[in-house]
Length: 264
Ligand code: 2AM
Ligand code: CA
Ligand code: CA
Ligand code: CA
Image 1 (tube, rainbow, N blue to C red):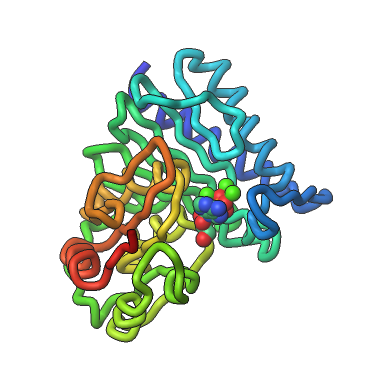
Image 2: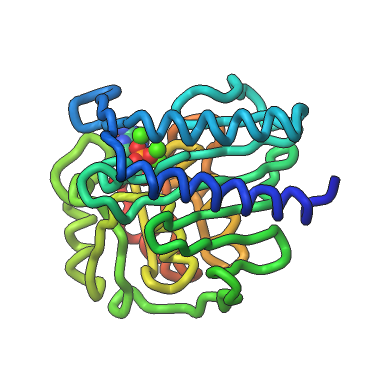
């Protein structure tokens, strides 16, 4: 079994899952909340995760799966081959907007990200990368990112982090958003990572992301020279929640050094 064959397999699984999601709009979608009233999940999130898991377990029984909805394996260490899957990243968008959500998948070998995918389901756009072989938007090779100063940069940030909050000094964030060219918030961490990798955004940050949100995206981002870390400047943790920032080289350092002040 080669990386190339896993890559082809993963792509066809993602396209098949995307089709399932698109046709799900013809039926009634069951909506539940998880940790709080705005933390939404649907039967489609669960069914898509179960679809991936049943196929992967059948065809690659030795691989393990970490999925947001909890149908995969209990992952305590990163040894072996692990599929990190978010069946729908941007569930709120899926429910309310019927667009702007993605399937996010990263395949790791002994903790090293080898294959990354972000699939914009409604646009049928696949962002993908193999470690060391460059990143692609569908069949188009994505160029290496150039340096952009903050004054020319569009930053992906959720308004929660600009309002007073318990994680970060929001006065410095207000300074950041005053200095940059503009801000955007798409409501899907995976899509925002794909946008940084393809130059549609120059940076994206969040105070609380899970491994399945970023696992695929950071592999793609690294292939175009974007820098992805937690807000302490360390490699993002893939065994639990962490802060996160991804940006063009140079801009990442500028934001982290001059505008990020974590509380506690
Ligand atoms: P989800 O749609 O898969 O839950 C929204 O700003 C982004 O944050 C989405 O990528 C969303 O993923 C993620 N997200 C939503 N609620 C979250 C939570 N309670 N903890 C961590 N990430 C969350
Ligand atoms: Ca969720
Ligand atoms: Ca997610
Ligand atoms: Ca999800």
